[in-house]
Image 1: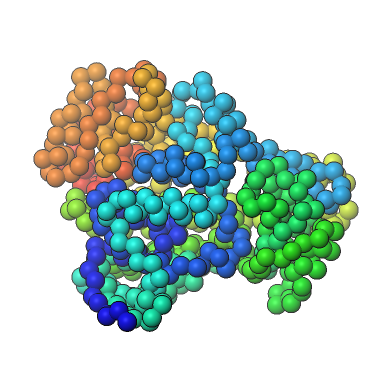
Image 2: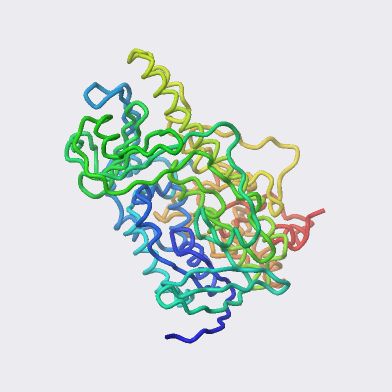
Length: 532
């Protein structure tokens, strides 16, 4: 039997799923070591977690870490479309087909667009297994990640100098003590870390519906698949999603609370098809969000902070958490980030989770209303008209790429000017708190790839006057890279001559002239003190 030990680490990450792994890689990107506890086996018990949808903005963030290409190689092919088919029954013609273009189609659509409204990356579908393999290989290659497989967190408590966790090796029960400056719970909706921190959950207001997710195999549905792992069929009250494994689907259907109905019988009655049930998981649409994202040295990220699965895709919200928290922990660890930087994690990410929850709730309500209308005998043209009016069905890259930290305490917000309004397409803007425009440079490179790993001052002045500002920052120990840009495509859409970009590709500050209070600006965006 192994002996109990006491380990020390700058950051302890509890959970090695997508969010925990991305957080560890974000820390490694900034040269910070972490220990990751991986109890293993959790994904195998939840049938709805077999396929991950990574939005284009998540892929941009993962591109910074050198992961985008490997994820695409391991994921669903670029030519696979993702249409959503709405129908009153599999034996009846579709009411509406909501198109979702493939990655190849999006690449072609934006091939000649270079006004800042084109993304640097598009979405990617990938099975959880291959995604985990890519992330684990990357963690192993960094030299900064100590992955403890088969270790579970039994408890954690914060104190004045950090936090102490108790970890258990599941194979033999040996307990270990881990001292960390910070602990991050990425351990899912039943988070041990959240429970130990005494953080409660806030459910979505209103009445709630119980659902049953049934993973099954059926060759009878093969003709309805538009591509491996990409078809979504809404058949009355039943939502079906195909998966990469041949003839495998997951069906989500509302059930009465506590109902003990035979899953295979439920599917046969609704589909009129022969099915082999592979797994069952009950869930509800309470969509809880943690009341706080931090207690001292303890933080929450991913599904420990917002339990949206299996109601919908949760990867984008969680990856945003991991990147935001990762660079801020690294900044404080290296001494250039102040205490307000860690406070800003909750101020930036919790509102985002609440907004994502509202969007997901709208999708679920659209499906419920469609089911009620179909059950009431609404004609096909009426149902199609109803669906066409639903915002939840429209393509909205402006929403996925246009997220802005409107109330962040570490962003220099502008006064007296209205922000750029949100639209269905990407609106190029360097408005503080938002993502700046992605632009292809004249040499064929991508502007985002030229941004530094820490802070970057993008300088569009003719005399590169930003070099002096970056020099002032570096004399104060702040890692500000100077990036002079003379490319006309960038100048046409960036809107300001001096733009300070954070490690997560969000704008922290901008102006046309050299500011008199540059030191105060730096202190503000680095969380050292508020700007006067």
